[in-house]
Amino acid sequence: MIKFNDFDMENLKDEKCENDDIVSKNYEHLESEKEKKLVNLMIEIIVSLTLKELYEESD
Image 1 (cartoon, rainbow, N blue to C red):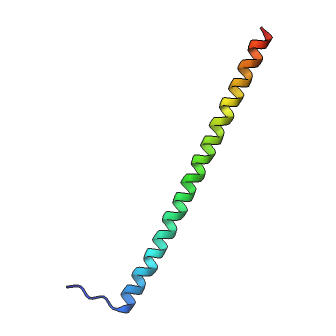
Image 2 (image 1 turned 180 degrees about the horizontal axis):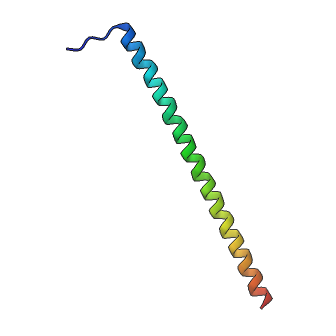
Image 3 (image 1 turned 30 degrees about the horizontal axis):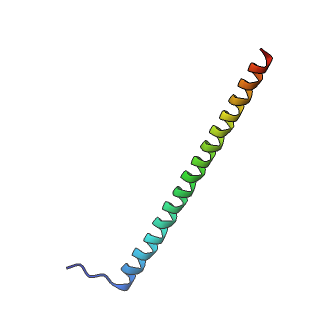
């Protein structure tokens, strides 16, 4: 059976907090990237539709 002392437990807690911070930052970064991609897609759609309307009106 493995025995942990207080020092080991404290190290595990610190390591878990560090890992949680890393995961949280990665998640935030991914969400930010997804938001940027969505905004860019919306812009592309709006520009495309606007250009289509302009071309149709000019004919």
